[in-house]
Structure formats: structure tokens, C-alpha cells
Image (cartoon, rainbow, N blue to C red; front, side):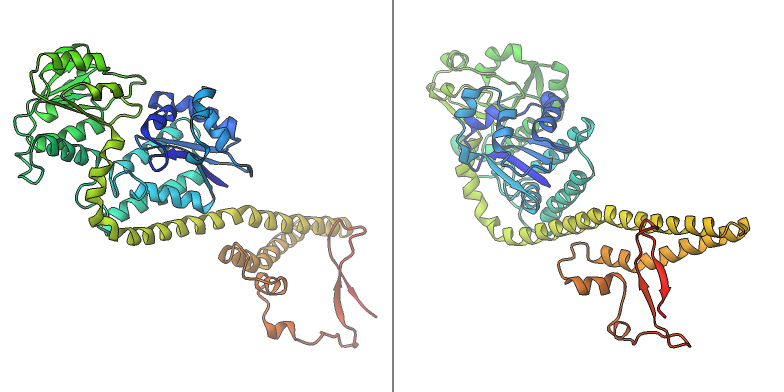
Length: 462
């Protein structure tokens, strides 16, 4: 059974989401722990700015939320601070549907946002690299990613503003300029400091640059990574060690790092604002865990946004896409059904193998009796009997095998209908009269298990 346990922006604010976020470097160890703690044969952890979720395959029937939360949060006091109703758990087709909704952007802060596709794909890759993802979750991930791609190709769910970067640029434009102006004018002349050199930091900076923000400085712990991003943004690179001077010159600050602690505290921001006269600063923190100490937002002249603060901008721009949700749900239903069809076919394979093994075992029991009673048969005759009995079993089991593959769940059959379907018996054949010999004796088949270990004997009734 597939399970998912997690928390997301829908129920949990960022100050608690950051407590359960899993850093990329911690994923391999966390995945292995999850397999042991949850009794899972397969496991994938999806940890993004808006959610942390554990997908796993297990036979457990109890509620896994407490175990999953204990796994993610080592500090008991922090665990106690996360209300039970914020942690959700789903299993079976509901878990599969949830993953498809996440990948399609229906469960995102920004309806239809496309960044989640790469994040979902990366989560599975990390699990596969750690040896924790098997064929069941791999097939589910294939259908979920296909649902996400189809949603964006076949509907308008991703039209308009559909990323964190879009929303950050809109929020900054509303403070510094007129967001309805030409996209190249709203932030013209506003200097931009980008802290972090990851994909989301760069994407957000590109949206702000499109609004006219310049010059651009990229600061990162590793200078080489900052230089690579700065080159693509037509900016310059620096290190985080020079943040005090860089902050003093910035009008816009975007921060998105993987640091487990604050990169900017209130005192750093206060010192940066001291020599700026009345020039304001907008700080947009799109990290989870957060990079900026919340008290920095109380410094005079500073406007601090975190991910949850962008929700009004998100809501304003989501209305035009709400009509696409039903179409996306239709796509999700198709992909979930395709996954379930595959799963049922896959589940029936062991039964079919067992059926054929049983048939072959009975055949060999009968062959042993023949060889014991007819030791005078030549080797070539015994070979012919071997081939003949093998062909007999194969043909006899062909009909039930085909029926099992066509109807793996068996829910549409009564017992008598199942027998007819499995052995391809028509109503006419079932109603045929008893076969008799020339001497008027009826031929019947009885099962004698006393000496044959399950091999059937055919008797002639006198």
C-alpha cells in the first residue's frame, strides 16, 4: 500500500514548516531512517518551500502521522508545537491522487506553478540514488509527472503569474513603482542583491531584472557559483562575507539559500539602514527554513516578505485560472486510473506464476507415476510424454491466465461465473449430457488423493 504523510502551506505557517524541512544533504540518511521507522519497502521524501512529505510503500495499517513527525523532528518540544490537525495522511489511490495534484500545481501556493515539476522529479532521483525507490513508486512518479506536464500543455492552469519569482516581482513593483506599468519600467533604477545561487534564487532575480531592477549583485558562500549566476544575470558576483557593505547599497534583496539558520539578522539590517537616509529596502525571503530573522521586518524603512506574505498577490492573480481546475482534475483522474490499472495487472503476476507452478507440479507428479509403472518405455517415448503433458498444462491454463490478466480484481464475478470465465466454459457446454461409452458406462472424473499427492485418476464406473 502506498502512503503519504506530510505538512504543507495549506495548514501550516512557514515558522512551523521550516522545522520539518529536510535539506538536500540530509536526504540520503533521512530516507534510510524513514524506511526503518515506517517499515517501508520504498520511500521518497519531497521537501520544498511549501511542503515536506514522505511517500512510502508499507503493509502497516495504523496511522503513520506520529511516527513520521518523530522521524522528521528530533526535538520533542518542537514536535509538540505542531498541532495534530496540520499533519495529513493518505493511502492507496488517495495518496496517488495527492501526488498528481501536487505535480500539476493544484496543491501549490501559486496555482499551476511550474517549479514543483523539477522538485518532484528531483525528490525521486534522490531516493533512487539512495536505493530507496522501487518499481511501484517509480511507476507512480511516471504518471504524476505526466499529469503535471499534461496539465500545463492541455489547459491554461499555468497562464499568467505562476511562480514565486513572478509574485515576488509583483510585490516589489507594488511598493516601488506601478505594477500596471510596462514590465521594463516598474523597478528601473532599483539595485538588486541576490543572496544564494540556486535555481529559485536565479529565477526570482530574472523576474525582478525583467521589471528593470539593476545593477544586480549575486552573493553566495561559494564565489564560483555566484559568478556563474551573475554572468547569466549580467551582474557581478561577491561572497556572503561582504554582506554588510552589499546590504547598504541594495534597494531590493532576494534571499534563497539552503542554510539551516538565519543569514540576515535584525541587527545587520539595522546597521545597513543607518546610512541610507529615507531610502527604503524591500527584502523578499523565499527560503524554508527562512534566511531572514523576522524581527528585521520591524526596522524602519524595511519591508520584509516571506513566502506566506505573498499569498495576497497569489490570490489576486489566481482567479483567471480557477476555471481550469476541473480540466486538470480530469487529467489527474486519467493518470491515476492508468496507474491503478498497471498496479492491478502487476499484482496478478505472482498469482499467475503460482497457478502455472502448481500446474507443472501436478504434471510432474503424474509423470513420476507413469515412469514408475511403465519402466519399459524408451527414453524417446518418455520425452514425447514430457512434451505432451507440458503442452496439455499450458493449453489448459491459457484461458484462466488470460481471464486473470483481463479482470485482475475479480470484483465483477460470482464464483460460478468466475469458474466459467477462467476455464472458458460456455453455457451450452455446461448443459451438455453425460458422455457414455459403447457399453453404456458413463465416464466421470473423481479425485483420489490417497496415494498420488494430488494427482487425479480417471475411473470407469461399471
